Structure formats: structure tokens, C-alpha cells
Length: 453
Ligand SMILES: *[C@@H]1O[C@H](CO)[C@@H](O)[C@H](O)[C@H]1NC(C)=O
Ligand SMILES: *[C@@H]1O[C@H](CO)[C@@H](O)[C@H](O)[C@H]1NC(C)=O
Ligand SMILES: *[C@@H]1O[C@H](CO)[C@@H](O)[C@H](O)[C@H]1NC(C)=O
Image (tube, rainbow, N blue to C red):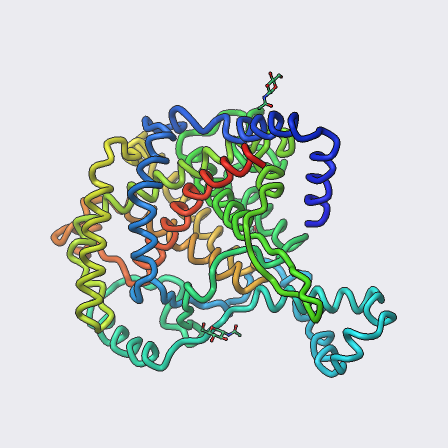
């Protein structure tokens, strides 16, 4: 972090104020150069979508997500990583013992003795302790909510649901209050998160070559529409997560008696990730992929509208439930006025046998991506990673389940199963979409910060 700040200051110093203004606005142009015109493989324009999102959708979804129905997410964060051992910098093997030791050190010694403070061990210990603190979840849930969850459970069990994602019923699944645990920069960095993304891209994105890249490659042989879509979806999610980390970046303030963490936008970090000059030319495409992912989830919500309009959004508080239903109706109305929805019927439209194989492959790859999320070495990052991949999974389920979705629809005519969504699927779908909506909203902020910094 210091490095970016230093280089920014250096940049300002070298170039002088007048030129910097010019250079900076060019940075904004460079980062956002692709953010106009049509979104690849779709007929709608980035500008139209930005305006719709920032003016109409974002304020509504933000308000909905603060409601009890959407703020509590039941998740199992204790699932073992099926692919490798936890290698995060502050994983048990590196840090646990140290942390215990640290607690035993009198605070006077910890802070007072410069010999201790400047030893490498001590610094590592301190930064691990800090990383652990920042990535820890606040699992506080009010007694009232705990009582309400019992009613939720009773209600949900009476709903005759047929699918169970992330073994919601497992004893290890717990409700987490999403408002108490916002997605933001936690200090989780280094090899562990790189490995997560590398695995997702390399092994699960139908990449024709092995090189680790972010957006659709320019050099590789062309991928079919479906594989391109898959790749773009993942890249859009990655972009969105990075925008949140840049928008809520960690800064430490020295209060004299200790450090206080606070979070605010980090323009240099944003530029580093999205300026073509520092991102191997790929930054603008990454931003465009965010719009693609947004369009896909927007379409899923639009398609599920007949189903969602029948949903009671039960929280055992009838006034609250009524408000939420009104908020949902309002949002669905806005979404239905959007003329250029993503057209999922173009996917898997070829020869039926090939399409089926492709669909299975698509599903398996996606399932694997969601399992990789169990390998994330920071609880808060894992929480949001799981939530967003589950939400995307729900969107794909809605788009590719087959029949029309409504009270009388059947997913599979032979099995006579009605289309259904669990509470968790609805919660993750809206929260995942809300994250994308927030990212697009944040782009305006970065654009103006970049052009006037
Ligand atoms: C930007 O640079 C151009 C010349 O390259 C100059 O004419 C213009 O006044 C500069 N604008 C600002 C706002 O500094
Ligand atoms: C968790 O959140 C509650 C409610 O905001 C707050 O009172 C509590 O201090 C928090 N706990 C931690 C460990 O931050
Ligand atoms: C799933 O991902 C893991 C880890 O990246 C990889 O080893 C495995 O081959 C993948 N399996 C499938 C079916 O994609």
C-alpha cells in the first residue's frame, strides 16, 4: 500500500500540478475507454445500463438488502477445502501459536520496547494479528433474531423444497449478519488469494492456453459463445470484488496510542488494476465484463419475476414482509422496463446432444468454482466469495432450468417438479446482484476521482 501511495506522490511531484491534471484525466479516459457502446455478445449499451443502475436500481436494491430477509445469510464456513491445505499467510500453522504468545506478552512490552517492535518476528506477529482481526467475522446476532430464525425454519420446512445448496441443514451452517460484515479490504493478500483466482481461471474457465489471465484472451483461438460467456461471468465477478476492495480500502491512522483502521477509496489501487498501462492492456475489458455479469443476473431476476411475485419473503413480521414485497414489486417493475435484456436462449442452442454435453460441462465447472471458495483463507472473504458464487449459481439455475418460471411451471415435466427457489437462493441472488450494482455505482466515483485527483 505504501508503495502505491509513494508512487502516486512521486508522480505528482515529477509532473507538476498543471500537467498532472491533464495526465490524470487521460488516466480516466484510459481506464474507462471501453465503457461505452455495446457490451460484447449483447445488444445493450454500457451507458444505458449505467444510468438505469445508478439512478433506479441501485437505490432500491440497497434499501431491500438492509431488510431482515436479505441481511441474514446462512452459510457453512467450516467446509474443508477439497483441493489443497489452507496456505493463507495467517493460517493456523503460521499464526495460531504466535497469536497465543502475543496475548501473553504484556502490552507495555509489546508497544514500549523498540527491540521487540523492530524484530522481524514481532512485526510478522503484529501484521498477522491485524490481518486476523480484519478478516474475522462479527457473528453477533440479537436474541430477537435467533428467535425469529426458529420461525423461519418452521416456515421454510413447510415449503416442500427439493434442493439444498451448501448443505444448509448441516450443523456447521450458521446465520451471518451481512450488514455487520461488509465486504471490504481485509489485508488478505499474497499467494493464497492468487492461488484461488489462478485455480479458477486456469482449471475452470475453459482456457485454451495455460497462461494466467483475467479477461478473454486476445491471442487464443476463439472460444464458443458459451465458454466465452462463462469466462466473462467469472471475470466480471473478479472485477466486482476488486472494485469493492479498492472502494473500501484499508487505511491506518496513528492515534498516538495505537492504530485505528478506517476504510475509503484508493484511487491508485483502482488505477493499478484497470489502467491498460498497468494491467497488460486488460483493465478496460475487465470493467466491461462486470457489465456482462450484471446483465446476466439482471436477466435472471427478470425471468424469475413471476415466481418472486408469489414469494412471501417470510420473516414472521407481517409489516416488514409486506414492505419487502412492495419493494420487490417496485424493483421488478423497473427491471421489466429495461428493453435490452441478455438473451439466454442463444446459449446452448446448437445440436441438442452437444448442447446437453456443453451444459453439463458448464455446470460442473461452475460447481467446481464454488467449491474452490471453500479454500479461501480469510473468513470474511470466504463469506462474500461463497455468497456471490451461490448467487451466480442461482441466476444460472433460473436461466437454464428449462421451462418458464411461474406458479404452475414445471422444471422437468417427467418429474413433475415445480420450479422452486430456497430462501438461501433468493438471498444470495439479490445480494450477489446488489454487489454488482454497487460496483457499477462505484465506477462513477472512481471516474470523477481519477479525473480530478
Ligand atoms: C492540457 O494540455 C494541453 C496541451 O497538451 C493544454 O493546451 C491544456 O490547457 C491543458 N489542460 C489543462 C486543464 O491543464
Ligand atoms: C459486533 O457488532 C456489534 C453490533 O454492532 C457490536 O456491538 C460489537 O462490538 C461487534 N463486535 C466486534 C468483535 O466487533
Ligand atoms: C476442480 O478444480 C480443482 C482445483 O482447481 C482441479 O484440480 C480439478 O481438476 C477441477 N475439476 C474439474 C472437474 O474441473
